[in-house]
Amino acid sequence: MIARYDALPAGLLRRDRSPHLGLVFERFPSLIDPQTVKMAEDARSKWLGDFVVLAEETAMRKQRLADVHRRLDAVVADRRGQKRTFTAVERFATGLGNPNAADIGFSFDAACGVPCLAGSAVKGLVREGARLVDAGRTRVAALLGEAPSPMDGLDGTRGKLVFLDALPTAWPALEIDIITRHHDAEGVARQAIPLDADQPNPVPFLTVAPGTAFVFRLLPGSDEVDQGAISEVWNWLTNALDFGAGAKTAVGYGRMVPKAEAS
Image (tube, rainbow, N blue to C red):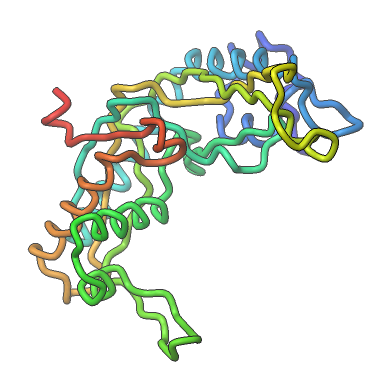
C-alpha cells in the first residue's frame, strides 16, 4: 500500500519523515476534490505555501543532494567529461506543464527530489545556442546529432555528447509566483473576447529563487570528441542561458550566467 503523505498529521510528516519532494508535489497533494480529482482554486495557495515550508524543514535532503553530486562527479571524472556552474540571476521554473493535481507542475530530480533541469532540456538549450551564433547545421549535427527526416530521405544521427540533468549545487530556496489570468478560457464558447467585466484569476506556481547555482555536466559519447569541440558546446550553452532556461523565459525567467560573472 502506498502511503499518502497528505493523510498524515503535518507535524509528524515534518518532524519524523524526509519525503521525496517530487513525489509529494506530483502524487500526494492534499485538498483534492474527489469529484474532479483536482485541487480547489482557493486551496492551491495554501498547498504551495505548506510545500515550501516542508522543503525548508528537512535537512536530510541536503545530504542526499551531496551524495548525488559525488556520484555524478565520479562519472564525469571516469568518462573524461566536464562540468561548469551557472548562477540563476532571475527566478527559475521548469516543468510547469507537467501533470499535477494543482494544475501547474514542476520538475524534480528522481534521485533526491531537488528541482532540476532535465538533460534533454540542456541539449535543447545547446542547440538553440548554436543557432544564435549561426554555427551551421553540419557542425551542430556532427556534435548533437540530428532527428530523422523521412520527407527528405534522411536517417537520424546520434550525437557525440551526453548531457546530464543540471542540479543545484545546494538545496535551493523555493518561492511562489503568480500568473494572473484575466479571461476565463472555459468561457470562450460563451464570450469569445475579453471584456472589462472579466474577473482576474490569480494562479500561484512554484519557482526556484534567484541566486541559485546549477551544475551542468556533459560527457563525451565516444573518443572522437576533442576538448575543442566540448569548449564550443559550452559556448553555445552559455549563449543560450543568457536568454534563459526552463519556462517563462520570454518574461525574463531562468537567465543564468557563469558563476564567476555572478559573484
